[in-house]
Length: 259
Length: 219
Image 1 (cartoon, rainbow over the protein chains, first blue to last red):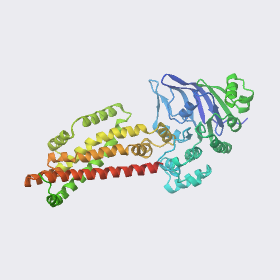
Image 2: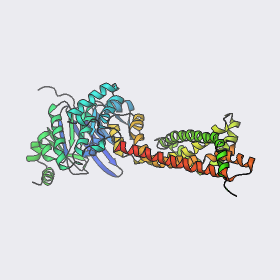
Image 3: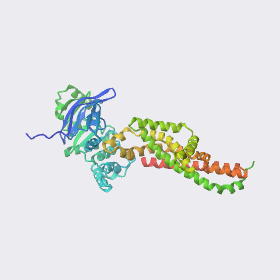
Image 4: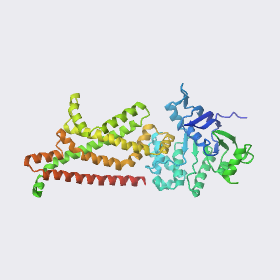
């Protein structure tokens, strides 16, 4: 048996509360590079919080979080987590995130949205960044909308610009936080097809929080079922969706799909 | 007391230098108020508690004391500290600092109104803190508060006559000098009123144009 490479994401006992609400109650997870992982579960179970912690938008309260072998947080004597700024930026550079509400910069056109980080973070020359941005806009099928302002785009187009924007930094990990939840039903398919294409390339590790069970089943290598702030079940989709040993997972999937 | 149109037309040219001084004071004061106001608003939001509190204190102090007192204070006290500024520069500084405090509160509202998701997106793209403010947050905050900033700037323009108190020969001071010479105040003071009315209306129209432009850019 070949030696397995170290996981690109490694979590141990990860905990996070907002105010008095314990959102994550001890999450352990190893994700090998290139894997596509769907994250499902009832709302409030901690899925989005997990992504926020992986994007390093919030600090965990306790536990270990390692991305590509590096841990940005160290616990201070008082117990609070503190990040070394340089390491935080370095680790963040390996991760990209797409949000439910797109969060495009409304005062910049599609091209400028995608170019901003390559210019200011990677230090690309404007011409180079422009070329790269156009290439990614082309990959999401929006080369002709480069000059459009976000307000002139449909929800699905906005989300595809947001995906191009995150990809343009060429992250090793991409996090998708309910990226189709704010879309009109007829626009969901295009965005999901884009994710499927990305997953098939196997060059990026993907964590996808979604309510689309069929998508989770068909496109993911692995499904995590979150409940009450822990990973209640973890396995290949076929196992979880069909002969799930976990009663709650089955009931959740049945309730969501209406089967 | 009859308004003498010929006399009014006759003294009109005498106002030209004063008008120029008033416009210069307004423009320079405005520039100072807009930039210093933004700096104050950002310091007010600083994570370091004492910086934030100190800034809040400065803003509150400047807002709660009369502009005329501040003008006199700077005019008589600054020279004692070794800073020798002209009356015009002192007056403009006072105007700028006073209105910077008001602009700071306006900017603060604008900054607070930028959705949390914009900060998240900037952080997820690994933009640094200054870059995030300068490229992402501040442009959106400013676009939201242009009308409110505009109101304060028109108000500042209308406060320029206070500079006459420290010997700046602006519009009001000119009118008083003309009156003292000829014992006719009606025409001179009326002209001052007309100047302010026209320029305020012009400024308001200009602000609407800027506002419209910004809305188009964001549409």
